[in-house]
Image (cartoon, rainbow, N blue to C red; front, side):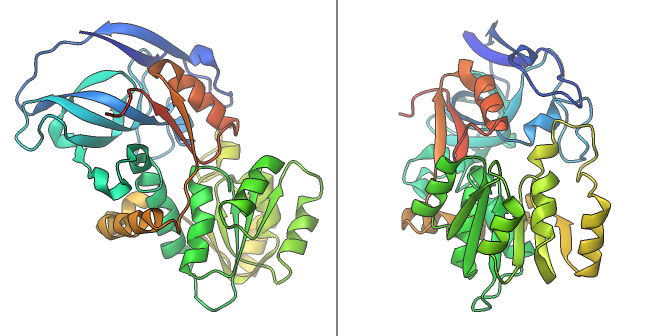
Length: 349
């Protein structure tokens, strides 16, 4: 059968910004023969996320994800439906997910590498299994829970950078749900700021593109910052850390401002920021959600409940068609999304 798929055409270079020419959409022939244990799956949704930029380099800088290979099919988080099965644990019609789903319309996969998912967790809204009730939600929830040291009733202020993105838009709300009293979001446009405060429950929101971010943040956080959920790194993080209280906590989730630069991960801080961390006894530990797999089930159940009851509100930016996957990734890297960036490959039945 004929399928469409994306392969990596070239690398942008460790210091380069990704461009459309780095990707190639091609038509290919997919064998219909299944070996024992395999399944044929139709791709429903593909997730595109900032960390994928690291996979475009020859080395990712981490030991838990591999670089994409030139001329080979790209992959990321995905959701699909089983169309044929030679795996005893999976049947036709099952909904499955994988952290390494190929960017192609249909694929043959080892069924033992797939996770069967329950559409009831999200009332049938399957894209949420890649976002708020999936890896993104787990990252936001467990990041705040395990590294934020939230103390209900302690009048804590939490700042979130990249606050209108997939993870940040959830992290701020979760901060409130776990007991923070004041949540401030930092993002790239006034439109995003308005959505954070009017729809997602942030107390205040600031655009980093407007002048005087440091002074505006000081006005929003008169008692200083107790918890910082860091999605961006760079100058924004330097400003936030300079206003953090003694024995406060940085949740080091992402560093998207640094992903197009040839620096190690986590990127080094400037000397002034390093000295503030030491002088103020501020914790800044790298957070990796894969270290908390023992909490996955209970965390997903909590996220599901919050979403179903409307306590956790979800924003998605969805584009349609496999041919738009690379464009969705490039747009997301430039901040073109609000909430989770998703590609809907096939209409959900």
